[in-house]
Image 1 (cartoon, rainbow, N blue to C red):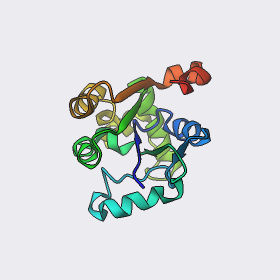
Image 2: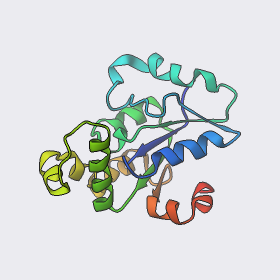
Image 3: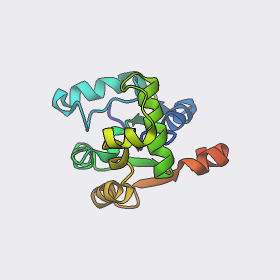
Image 4: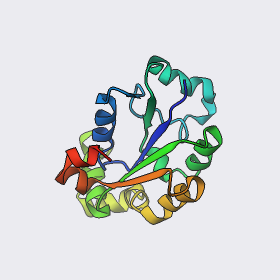
Length: 168
């Protein structure tokens, strides 16, 4: 079973909310686990491995994979397009400074890094800034899929009005 929608992130921008909302819809099924990360980290496992994450969703009209790593991985958009050219893509963005700070706190809470102040965290982890280069990364997805297939949402809008955001 192939997915029809992919959520490409960005990390710490309400992708868990999106996954939950989509999974609660009676016609949309979501992958297990939430972050399959096929087009970024596990592409070498092949299409059959990827599609097994959706086998339990055969009764759903739409199937979704939400993997924030897709947004900034330079290979993911082309891989996704070659896999399925009619995929719908959802990108969630957030104020890049707030996103980087949330990412920093997440890494500390998970125990991935020692507790550092944010300034030292930025010096220690270039991914905090790299993931926030929205224009660079979103451009790749828009070039590969076109604006008709890519929905861009802002986490701040989701937070302000989750019901309205869910209806998009």
